[in-house]
Length: 367
Image (cartoon, rainbow, N blue to C red; front, side, top):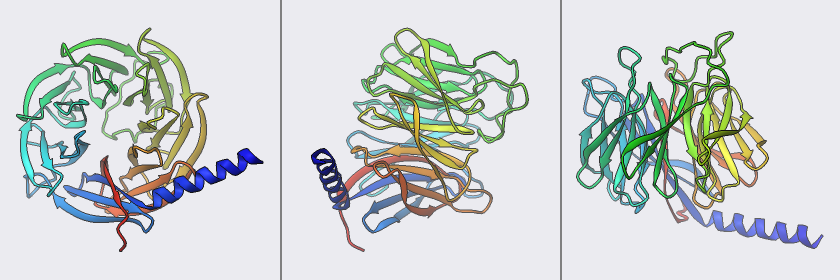
């Protein structure tokens, strides 16, 4: 009884502390060329400001990926569509002003930033033309110049660095591979085939992870690579086979395959390394797993269809999820309480809500 009482007391303290501060996240709307700043706190979630991005007024530029710098002074947005190349744009968080931008490859998508904030690693997804190997662009954030472009695989996605910043991982949707880059030598060091068997079947990629697998297709079609907190493993979302594959980074072998929901798409791990959160693109849900056992602790349905991104707050209290929506529907940001294992707030943003990243916490602001 004393332990139970202590647990309840600690839970109430954590909850009270969470209510005293607001959480701010940046969100992209791919079909509206918008960047929104969302605030969540005791009074719910709301958009506090929104800006336009892109430079093609008669067409959709398609902002896709976003990352906030470690010092919280800047954020970087990939603009997927261009003529023909995409780009990455640097913004100042103090006023959302554009600082600089640079051209990259075809359809730059997910990106991550080194722990010192000096370099971006951007996957060039390449939806144009034939299915050919694409690349990862390395960009200096100080000069906003592309310092390297490393050929990796066909349709790379899900760029993430380990916590020490020594390795970058991405997944190849069309080649069913996990790829590792050494960030010091800027060379591809290892590749890993993820499918249980090589079915020999290829996807068109047109559905961005929405197409269900065809009969007899056992391929992975990975869409995300998320390193463990200690860097010992990488968790890969197999969108086609609906499983999460854990790969040991030392032995470069499969540790286990965790059964996931239909169309598992993006992943994030709590900072204590205890839980993994996945967005399930075809299942219209979010799953929360206990990493040690691989057990699904909760599966939460979402307000709209077509799941996309997820980010966990630094205190591991909440997960923010983007839902694209369909057609003319707005996109949605959903907030999940990771202690209560339930959705506690939703707010609409522009259509096709995509990339999302945590910005900062602030003392609670009353409406």
